[in-house]
Length: 472
Image (tube, rainbow, N blue to C red; front, side):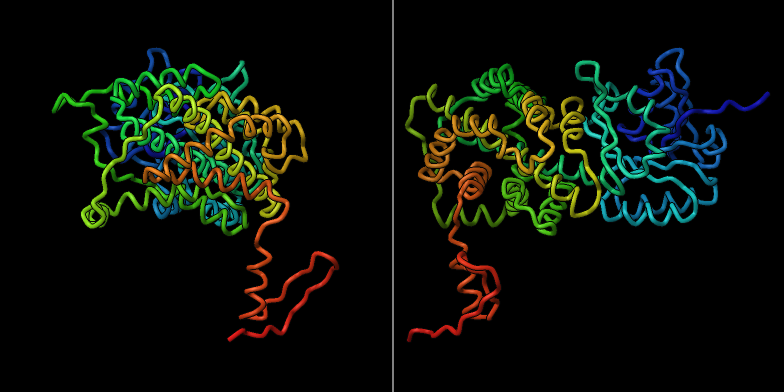
């Protein structure tokens, strides 16, 4: 009897890989998964919906031999050397025209290298961002593919079937050339860092500044999630404050060490922003605060030296919560604006041809940064020339309406010694971006003074240098 052939293969059966395969099977595709761990392959098969076609194998040879040609397979393994190791193992097993997808969080420069190497030997390679976590992978993630458009067209029907849907529209689309898929996912994660930092600052100001209980915080975030800023991150934040610790009976959030982990994508976003260059200070501030959180022993020593105490913010609670909501709205919008402006610039500078309006559509469902705000951004990007959301008239009106709130929140935070880095960076960016003239003329004068770095003038074109005289 002829051996059954499968539509799609997965290398790496962690939670994301297995859930994505099961999702594909539920949509009528026959799938096969490879993992060296037989427990994972057996678990994959036992978790499959009855009547679906799912198989687990423990050698690459088994998987490759049972895939339909041209073979379509995805890697969901840790970024870096593990990806290269899998590719090297695959090379002698595949044939020209086969499609390899890297669905992990690889650095886009690694993806560029792999595309070039594999193209030269006849393989199609795609970098693809996937967002939505474990549940998203199982029920419908946001999918960000880029690179080989011919390969995308081959796998598009499958990706559209398993992706999240918003108004029956799949949250997947071809997002540009070369490493565009991983670049878009990197920026997505940078925005995610920024919004998470803002939410942590809201928590700090309410919990410590207003001395609000976790029960009260649960209700505040639940109320916020029912409004115009409804989002996945606000939704899960509300749930966190309602969770009790099995060991102590306390609120679980109070038992968690204040040291943030990171897998590097936020740092990559900051580095890539500097390389373009494109200012993304809200994202940079979020990365910096995660780094600072790791300095636990130093922070404890500084706490003793400065005799730091948490200061109560003496203000009407209802009034403060309304101000904080508007400030969060303002700063969240700024976070998206910086990330999307970075994609706009990278699209041109790195020749990736990233369709930013399509990115906004893909992010509206399934992903970690999905938010009701994205519908407004979708309208703004109907203007194909838009370089930054802050230049859209409707977005400008929203920011101006919320401007007083973030000014007030930043002032109260500073006066009461709360490190609201995300809010402060967002307001500083807004204040600088809308200035016709900045004090940078002084910096250019200084650079020319000590290093003859030259400057430009406001009244005539050209490059100028002055022989400065130091005043004794």
